[in-house]
Length: 475
Ligand code: FAD
Image (cartoon, rainbow, N blue to C red):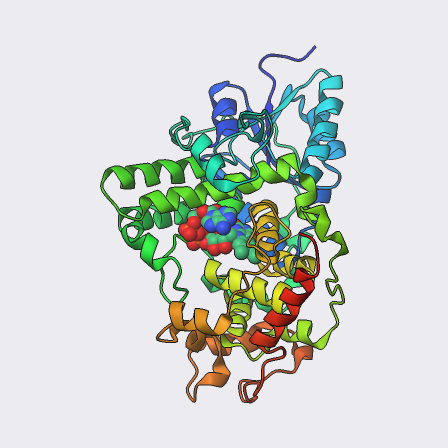
């Protein structure tokens, strides 16, 4: 028999915040002792280098936040189910609650955990909090899920999104804290090699930093978002994806800040709210069609002659920012220096890889999964399948970005390419030089190397080749 006063375990995952955290709020209000636990489990172990490192920093930060209100974050490593069953037995916990996840690996894990704990008489279950609208609550008139963004947007834009609430000021501790691992012993940054020291200053770590960034953006810069957001050389977007992906800020808080800005007459707010819904749309699609993550969403692309060889010289050149196309190369360098990439640059880099180089989007998606600190399974997969043409509501096959004219349009004064491409100037700025400190030594690259004289694949030739290949098919 479980005692009603027994501890509640808050199973911490991608919800590294105290503010507007429904699980924590419920646990705190229950009046029962609360034991926050992070498990480095099979799902998190499989993360790429940058996301795993960034996750570790976020977990460490949350531990400090919890210590600030007299609580602790217990760290354990192993299979989630085994760890949680063990901890529940050890602490006498009567409940294990968590924020819901929607990717297939997490769903499978969570179902296993729930049934094992419930079988032991423990109140185990999830609450929403990572997205605005639960994927199964949005249906087309025919009763299916949405495949196109605009009607999805119309269906959700007037939904009631609960207002964000404050963090608890204290959490009741258990009579005795269970033992915890030390995060330093987990080596979550091991695979970052030399990159960590370079990327670290660019991070916006933790919920206070996320809240400050949201306040600064929604109070001011959001006004110019519509016009500025496509220019990678200016700070025209919120930069919140890194915090949203680890739940350091809630998307509900972002939504309400966007609504307030809209009410205050800020011109760009409407567009920004739509971008938040693109994130939800990616989750909607991942939930209903989990093959979005690994397979061509449109099955008719399965026979397309993608190159899947990661070792091809042009793919290596793409990864290293040496294609000879400045917009693409600056994007790939930005990724290595900051752990992020501007959305316009992501589209250009992805289009060049999948269309001009005719390489499979999976190659690019995996590379991003290893290098992005804001890696998000749903948004990354949707972004790649959008760019390649194989996804739902994707860029049509004949729409091949021209990275040269795009540069003239969106980086007219060359602020972006100059910032990240050392080879282009006699006195390169610090971010351009930092790239050489971040990359593996085995790449043997130096800022003194001349910039490639010719592109690895000429944009026009690549475009014609891709269109000919697409055109021969019946899409
Ligand atoms: P803002 O412009 O300020 O937008 C606010 C928020 O809305 C973002 O933080 C993000 O959560 C969401 N958002 C904005 N644009 C999109 C979009 N196109 N799709 C889904 N959500 C969006 N986003 C990720 O968060 N993680 C990824 O791994 C990721 N991979 C991508 C890969 C490719 C090939 C492409 C084309 C896009 C990818 N995106 C990804 C989407 C987008 O590029 C980023 O969300 C955006 O650049 C983040 O910058 P920001 O926070 O300043 O966004």
